[in-house]
Image (cartoon, rainbow, N blue to C red; front, side, top):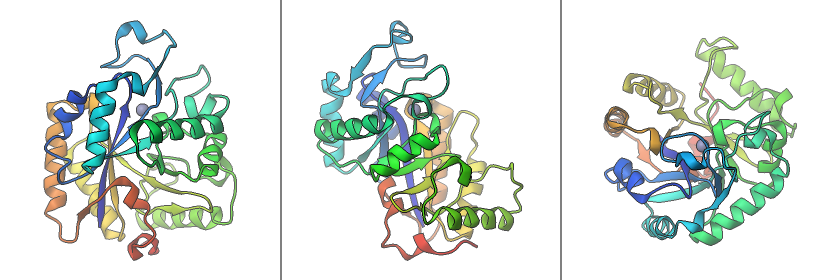
Length: 281
Ligand SMILES: [Zn+2]
């Protein structure tokens, strides 16, 4: 069983010390996928100066030279990998960035090329800001051939452009719902990558202020019961002492399970693992 960690919102406003605080005792054992914003626009949240909450200014990642040097070092050490997390991560009156922004294909192409150049790495995964992706947003990401790491993305065929795998993937989800006695409105995290023609999608379990270690352990147990894998998703700026303790206890629990391997988020999509294509249940 593969287990990975994803952390969102690394951007110009991030100090290396904030990431060190959460992950210095984690990434030697578990590499962390930092979902990174290439040209962040400020918005109201902890860690972004209030003067930038509504300024609309774009801050290229490389203007934070200390962060860029630090990230390059951590990438070289294989402690972190980088995913593309939107382009500006800005919200629009009628939706989040990858629901409402114009020029989504350009944002994917430019954002990816920018991060690859500035951080001297390869980007293979896209994490939608706020986990929100319209049909148009998904098309843009899929055309770029990037895999999607999300949470609670819609599986409904009406919310996506159909390809040769859409229907069979939708049926796999229905089978999983039945096998886990969920109704149509119950949320689920499907524990295998769903492979479409140009990209694959994998859902994450959130670590947010209300999450308990029992919930995460139950999610891990369910994924294991179905021969699947597990990805934990959080935001470093939200991880206080309590959440850090939940993270630590979850990793202890996961480590105690025979056959668990901690991997990069990118490896969740690897096709060479026979378990990743096994049918559900
Ligand atoms: Zn985000």
